[in-house]
Length: 189
Image 1 (cartoon, rainbow, N blue to C red):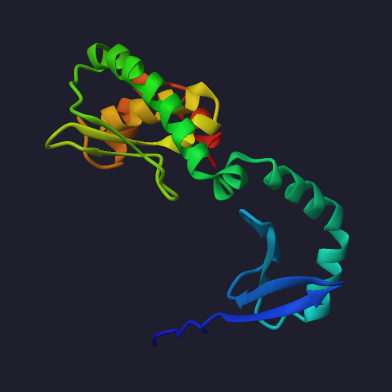
Image 2 (cartoon, helix red, strand yellow):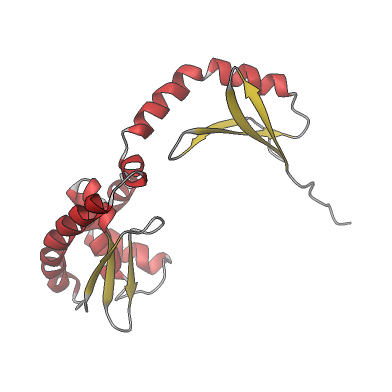
């Protein structure tokens, strides 16, 4: 007999002036998070949870919510959301000044040769690689992060010249070339 999953239910509640988007679904515990860049409150709750439980949770977690929102407001992601064309030009200058030297330093270590480098202001990717041509595109927003993040993205994209996907071999290559790549990647999240 097939067990049919119940579709999730979504509704919004007001907790002392804070709007909370609540999704009831087949889970066991409550989860409260903030959605970047503005820190909108989102809760996931088990089916049948009384809304008063969410109200109590939000009230209890309000000091945490305020701290997280303050951190978000000062984050590179928030700065990128309000960037001017002049800001984007400045970021492009920084990334395009630093990236070629990184590529040049890593190519012989990795045994690859990159093609053209391009720079774009992208919302959802840090970089991309076209293995057929070797073209690498880097996100200019990397200028907002520590230099080791740009280096991580360069190595990541160069690895795609050796392995197209993100499977086990790709991770082995990244581990071999840059053992701390996961820590660097975490700074971009």
